[in-house]
Image (cartoon, rainbow, N blue to C red; front, side, top):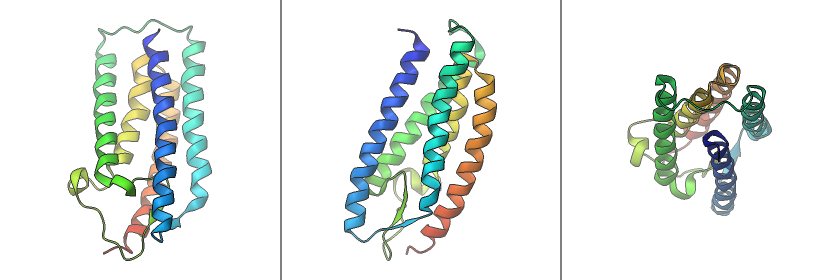
Length: 172
């Protein structure tokens, strides 16, 4: 199987798995009295990520499914960024445990989590997504997708962090 198609398939299943995990965590958090903040952003975030995958495939198809030059410097940089992003993503999920969610859910009166990677980076999961939005298109030379969706994702991340910080300010 083509490396890029394999990678896209992996990332799609990863996202689906994260949605399942998020839903499981959401049920636990709601039972503990969690409140959701900025719920109207979820459809936009889901649309952005879905459109990103469609754009990746469309631009790759329009280029004629080019063979990847794995010896190239941009491929190597893209691979390093992707692996770093994946590492940060999984450490973020592990560090938050059942508090990790794709929604902004906060249990009033609880303590802010400051273990694992959250001791050092305030929003590591968003950093991982930013890296991914850059790295994946870079691997196949999908420059339109890289530029357009990096800009769209930057605005989404800015918006999310603003609302998440407001919600987290309620914690001890």
